[in-house]
Length: 99
Image 1 (cartoon, rainbow, N blue to C red):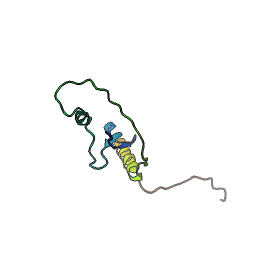
Image 2 (cartoon, one colour):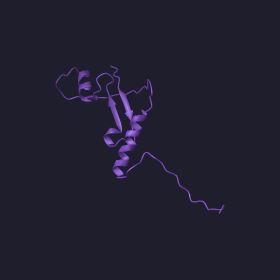
Image 3 (cartoon, one colour):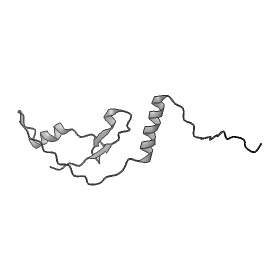
């Protein structure tokens, strides 16, 4: 039985549990492996000693969207309590050699 999922890895996520997310590509729900394994034994009552093989094949890789990275960096800045201004002013103090 083959099932397909989307794995998102975001080490910059605000919470630890959001760093690794496995979702169904159609419904967006996280998989319930207990119900998937129960289907394999046709939901027959009893206790089972099981061997579960997980084979991973990467079908496609997409980078994290830029907006997600900016969002994560913004939340880090908020956590630090710093205010970031969108303007940058550069000043320099050069010796006045033409006086």
